[in-house]
Length: 257
Image (cartoon, rainbow, N blue to C red; front, side, top):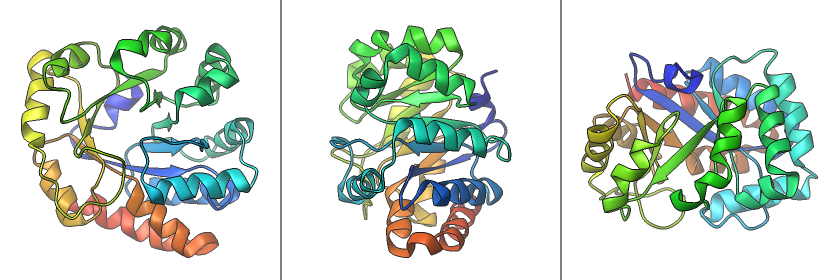
């Protein structure tokens, strides 16, 4: 079983996202440890990019803060090496195709696998173009995570059939960010996935921010992904974000039990 799939075993997984290097890489290290200790089952580490097209203003601003602070892919790799001495929960990188391209696809994937990462999410790579990355990921034992959106409709079965690790179900159209209401029929999306690939976990992301929303979404899916609500707290508390983020993760995880 892939390490990512094991994060969903016998429980609903809570999956937080943070932007590496916001406000500093030292702080990222502390936050990852705090989240792992407070119930995170799998952690998404965002590698900042200058033009993050899938992100709303909260994560865009975090990317900018991280890049301004001098965060680079190599420095993030070094940070993960440090984290892996203390944190064993599965971790995946979330970034953009350009970041991987400019680093070199094979060099990026090989290094990510060597330092103990478990998967890769590239939200700007459509399913039809995943073969540019997926075989290299398979070669080095990294799960290449697929996303499905409310508009995927007839493509859902096709995407689900080849999915690895877990399927990232995008609950809302548009960019990431906190939503008051999530109106997508998430249950139907998950059902379509499970019809063709019964064993693949489905996690829902985009727009979830309250324990109540998380609890509701967990009725339909195997896990819940939260980014903007955490990144906003980091933006607000900066170097003092450790305790507020740990408390928030703990509340969200409890809502899934």
